[in-house]
Image 1 (spheres, rainbow, N blue to C red):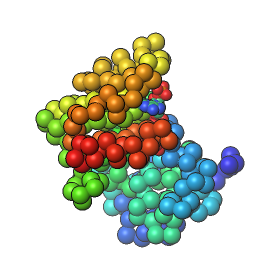
Image 2 (spheres, helix red, strand yellow):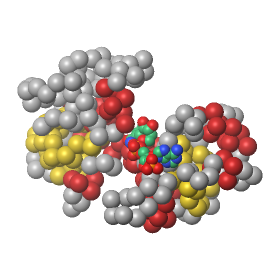
Image 3 (cartoon, helix red, strand yellow):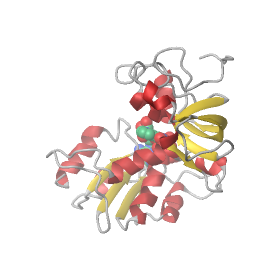
Image 4 (cartoon, rainbow, N blue to C red):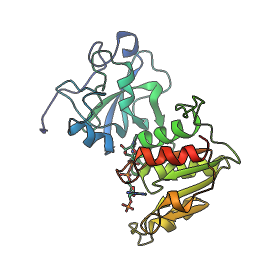
Length: 257
Ligand SMILES: NC(=O)c1ccc[n+]([C@@H]2O[C@H](COP(=O)([O-])OP(=O)(O)OC[C@H]3O[C@@H](n4cnc5c(N)ncnc54)[C@H](OP(=O)(O)O)[C@@H]3O)[C@@H](O)[C@H]2O)c1
């Protein structure tokens, strides 16, 4: 990876955006960018099989910034608006570059106006970590993006449903706990007694976020602790070899998922 000086990006057809979307994009002056696991996974080359990157490539997905320029077809934003966005979403509309231009780790970045949200008085620091992790958890819990082993739609967490969130202290997990509680679901999660910046433990933090049940994963195996209990959905925000997909799948099968 190198630090380089490059021209300010512009929404232009081809590598950046298909022609029909160029007028619907905004140019952002980046104030802050968040680092997500996908960044190092892309740097490692390990995602090349499913998410190939074409070079030169400016990494980074989450941006908090100010609108510096608006495309001709943009009506909802004006220069100077304070916004946040996951610009990795452009990946879904780029034919020649499936991983998209991304580009949060730079002074300027381009985003489709439809994917941008105004900050409504909240600071760049408060919001910059929200777009990618928040969207991931929102999709996992509510949009039916996944399927269980019988082919039925997952992601229908609602009032009275029980959801198990592995890794509640992860960025995705912490947001998922709050989303689950916001709709009235029963939320169980796993966390360690490791310390938060304010000196409290991650277990305390989980309770503060509203989790109904917190399993200390350093002391107990969650699958043993929850044996015989049934959940409507399991959302794995850890994915380590110890908590492998096979173990999660076995427990999901016990729950009849
Ligand atoms: N962030 C995103 O936007 C995003 C989007 C899509 C997919 N993902 C994927 O989702 C996964 C999580 O990403 P993230 O960004 O949410 O994670 P993260 O913020 O990096 O969180 C890691 C957290 O997991 C905890 N942890 C580690 N091992 C654990 C275990 N065995 N059980 C319970 N908690 C454990 C750690 O706490 P302690 O070690 O201190 O206990 C730490 O708080 C990654 O595989 C990532 O690629 C993330």
